[in-house]
Amino acid sequence: MILKIRQAGESVLRLSAHALTRDEILSERIQQLISDMRETMRDAPGVGLAAPQIGLDLQLAVIEDREEYIALAPPRQSEEQERVPVSFHVIINPTISLEPDSGEAEFFEGCLSVTGYRAVVPRARAVRVDCLNEKAEPVTINARGWYARILQHEIDHLHGTLYIDRMYSRSFTSHENYQRHWKDVNPSDFRTKQ
Image (cartoon, rainbow, N blue to C red; front, side, top):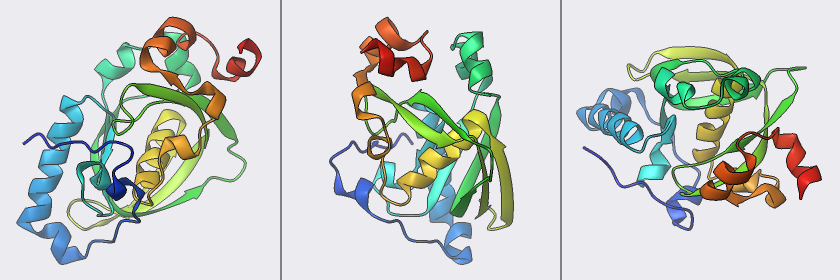
C-alpha cells in the first residue's frame, strides 16, 4: 500500500520518535508497515523513508539506493559523492557516530517531506550505525559517501530534524532551478556564484 508522505510543517516531523521493542518489531503490524514503507519509498521515488514521514513517531526507516537512480546522475557527480548501490534494508532504534577524521562533504540534498526543493547540506563522510534489522537482530553498519549521507538524513528524521535545519540557507533552491543552474556545479561553488 502506498502511504501518504507528510510535508514540512506537519508536527509529526518535529517529534523525537520512540524506540520499538523486539515484540513490536516482529509484530504483523510493523512487518506490514515495513513492506508499505518500501513500496512508498520506491513509488516516490526516494532512497530512504523514515516512519515520521508517513505520520508515525517510530524509530524505523527503510533505505535503498538503486543502480538506476545512480545512473540518472552525471558520472562525475556520483564519483564525487562516493555513490554506490545500496540494497534494501531496515534500520530500527539506530544510534549513529561520526567516524573520526573522515571529514565533511557538502552536496545538494532533497527530501520527500520538502517536496520540490534542494539545498547544500554538510554531512560527515563516514559513519557507524548500530541498530536492529526487521528481524530484531543487532546490526552494525559502517558507511561512507552517499550511503553515509542517506543514513544521517534518515536518522535525523527520527529525532525531529529536517535537512533544512542543517542546510546552507543561501543554497536553498527549487528543484527546477537546481536542474537549470546547479546540477553540474561543485556544491562549494554556490558561495562564489551568488
